[in-house]
Amino acid sequence: QVQLEESGGGLVQTGGSLRLSCVASGLDFGKTIMGWFRQYPGDERRFVAQISWNGDRPHYIDGVQGRFTIYRDDAKRTVSLQMNNLRPGDSAVYYCAAVKGVEYVYFGRGTEVTVSS
Image (cartoon, rainbow, N blue to C red; front, side, top):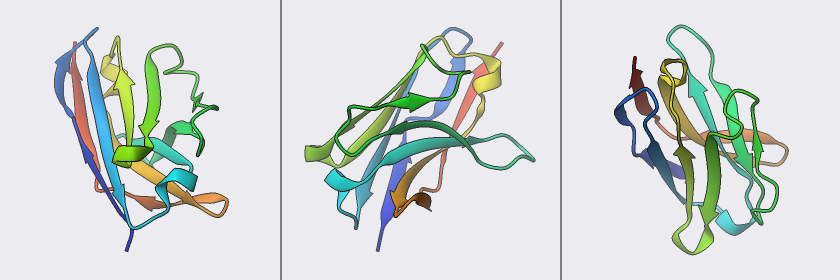
């Protein structure tokens, strides 16, 4: 059974930083593409960032490029999202995700990020 457990959300002021972490179990982590999604109230879950199984091809949406960094620690089965220079528009519930085959199939329960203006 695949489990993804996020942590690290919270309340921060504009310009502040947070680091989200996700511990994965039940999958071959070292061979799995991992990502982060976020969901605004009333909206669907949307892709934010992704890292390949070997960590050499991080990919970000335009709105977070240069502010967010995704990285992984295979020994700890953890994928993290360092978020700097946060803006109110980054306020959302953030989900850790794992690819199976060619699509994201597994998601965690989410961790809420609130950025105050």
